[in-house]
Image (cartoon, rainbow, N blue to C red; front, side, top):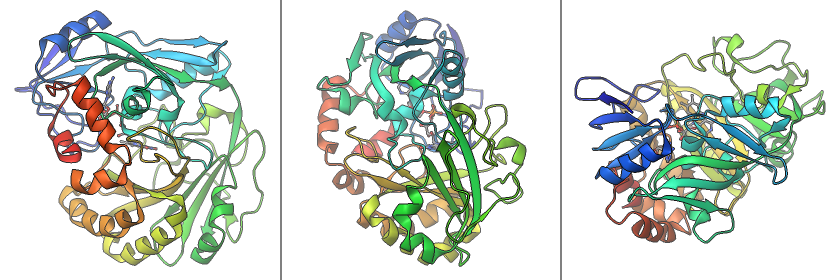
Amino acid sequence: MTTIDLSSAVETNWAGNHRYRARRIEHPRTVEQVQHLVAAEPRVRALGSRHSFTDITDTDGVLVSLADLPTTVEVDAGSRTARVTGLAAYGDVARALQAQGWALPNLASLPHISVAGAVATGTHGSGDRNGSLATAVAALEVVRPDGSLVRIARGEPDFDGSVVSLGALGVVVALTLDVEPTYTVNQRVFTGLGWDTVVEHYDAITASAYSVSLFTHWGDGGVEQVWLKSRGDDGPADFHDALPAGATMHMLDGGDTRAVSAQLGEPGPWLDRLTHFRMEFTPSRGEELQSEYLVPRDRAVEAIEVMRGLGERIAPLLQVCELRTVAADDLWLSSSYGTDVTAFHFTWNRDVDGVYAVLPAIEEGLLPLGARPHWGKCFAADAGALAPLYPRFGDFLALRDRVDPDRVFGNTFLDRVLG
Ligand SMILES: Cc1cc2nc3c(=O)[nH]c(=O)nc-3n(C[C@H](O)[C@H](O)[C@H](O)COP(=O)(O)OP(=O)(O)OC[C@H]3O[C@@H](n4cnc5c(N)ncnc54)[C@H](O)[C@@H]3O)c2cc1C
C-alpha cells in the first residue's frame, strides 16, 4: 500500500477548484487491504478519477484510491454482464468490451471518468430512451464501515438506494454492468436551429437520434450546434432549419477539433462516437467549472424560457450550455428518478465566486419546475431545497443510518445536501 501525506502535498480535483483536505491518500493494492483500511479508520471516502467539481469526494480523514488495484473487465456472455474492478475509467472498460465484441448502452461526454465515481453521482449521456450510466449497474460489491464486503444485486431491497450513493454507503470495489453486442454509431452535426423550431418541435428533435445534444449560449441565434449520434448508418441528412456542418466542429469557440469524437456521418465503433471527446486527448481548454440541472421532460420548454431570460446575466461566465435527455429510472437519488428529464448543462469559466453568485438565480427559476442538480457539479441548493425533489430521500437517509450510523463515510458535502 502506498501513502500520500497531504500535510505538505497539494492534491486537487480535475478542475483544480477544490484542494483535498483529507489527511492522506491511501493506495491499497488488494480488496483485503481496502477492507482493513476502512475498518481501521474513523473517517474514509473513496477517491475516483477526481472529475467532480465540489467537495463531494473529500473527507477530514483518509481518501482511498483504487488506482493500484488491478483493473479487470470480465464478460459473462450468458447474463450479458461485465464485472469491472478497481479504478476503471469508462474508456478502459469500453476498449476491453469492444475487444471481446461487447458494448455498453451509453457513455458520458468523456471517457476518462471512473465507472464507480460516475455511477455514485448519477452521471449520464443523452438519449430519450437511455437511462443514466447508473442504470446499467446490475450489482455492486461494497466495503462497509466495519470492513465487511457485501454484494448488492438488482432486485434486492437495498439495491435501488445503493447505486447512486454519493459515496455515502461504502467503497465500491467492483461493479457488474449490463452489456450488449457491439454496435456502430455515426455522428452528424448541424448548425443554427432557431428557438421557435426548438420549442415547437422539441419532442421530435430529441427523438431524432439515439443520443442528441443541443449546444447554445441562449442568444437570439438559438441552438448553435446539434450533435446527433445514431446507431448503425441511420441519421438524418436534413434537420429542420439547421444546416449540416461541413467540417468537424468543437462545441467551444476555438476548441481543438482533434479532441472531439468523429463526426461527418461515417459509422464507427460505439466507443469512438458516443462520447464527445477522444480518450487520447485532454477534453477541455483546462479552465472550467460545470453545473447541470435535470428538469422533468414535460417542463423542458418552460425551462428553456427561464434560461433565455437569464441569458444576458450568465453570458460573461458561460463557455457553453448543452441540453441532453435522460430516461426515467428507479434509483432513489438519481436526478432522473421517476421521470424522463432534460438535462441543462453549463460549462463555466473557472470563476468560482462568479458562478456561485449566479447559481441561486438559475435555481430560483428551475427548481420550482422540479429540476434536480447533478450531484457531481456546482450547485447551491441544500438539503432543505433538495429533499422535496426526491420522493425516496427519506428512504435513502434511513438506509444510510442503517449502513453507516457513525458516518465513517460522512463529509461536509453530505452534511449540506442530506442534512
Ligand atoms: C470534463 C468533465 C466532463 C464531464 N462530463 C459529464 C457528462 O457528460 N455527464 C455527466 O453526467 N457528468 C459529467 N461530468 C461529471 C462527472 O461524471 C461526475 O462528477 C463523476 O461523479 C466524476 O466521477 P470521478 O470518479 O471522476 O469523481 P470523484 O470526484 O473522484 O468521485 C465522485 C464521487 O464518487 C464517489 N466515488 C468514487 N469512487 C468510488 C468508489 N469506488 N466507491 C464509492 N464511491 C466512489 C466519491 O466518493 C465521490 O462522492 C463531467 C466532469 C468533467 C470534469
